[in-house]
Length: 336
Image (cartoon, rainbow, N blue to C red; front, side, top):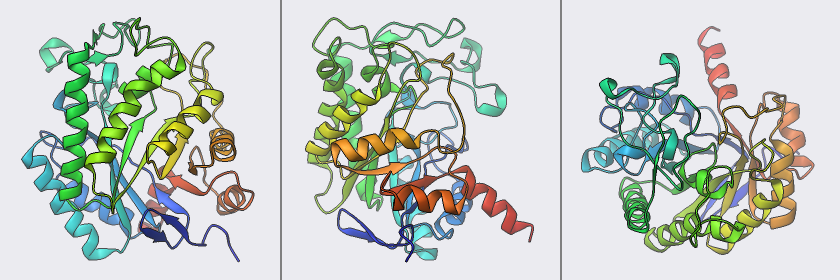
């Protein structure tokens, strides 16, 4: 019996296997709205055989998008486009479908990867970015606006509204993005959060805003739908977020009603030394799973079937989350 292909219960759903599709930014939206490209991409992923599909990060406000071409879920048009995509996916697959809701923080207003990833210039449509503190991502990046309490309350409201839109669009779940150096990750990491109020300093204070937002979303999201979060296992940088912090945060998310976490990491510092290799993020997932007790997903160069089977069989994670491995598999099938 393969553990990888055994059932897993999440919320009111029983996944037939433990292979899930990670959110993959496509940088192909128009004013935040999905297009035919997303029909093609997500339809392909939905028929991959995986049990759960997480749609790419959707900005909860326009200025929360990574690039001008990123998906958003802040307007009626965005919601209508997502509903169209969801209906198509459901017409071709029984896969459980959700969307990752996000705010890029100080990493917003940037170019698409194939255009260099750097910050947009004023003549390229750049916008003012928000962050917990007025600390630039790097020397070539603009200094972000340090969010006031009013800004934070407005952002919380936007997250809640986006979750409600996701429910109306037919999502089975929503995933809260709090890793990779985006807004929640910036609040959580002492490298990017140097606030002196109740939202900075200690770990409890740095977790306060992401947890407040998560709880507000959980209260507004239908009870029969589930919620999860993508979190950091580490910043890969001295003085930053640690695996100890990840265990505490995952435990608090579980108390707040999160049904799972997927553990990734990095992104707060561009000069972090990340020891990339097969399964390099898995040890962080293993620790979170064992010490917090929450259902945990693993990511990070999981490319081989035996490797994936070992991760779940040995109890390092409850499920695996694949992105490029599934894309490469689709390319291979297209050439057969």
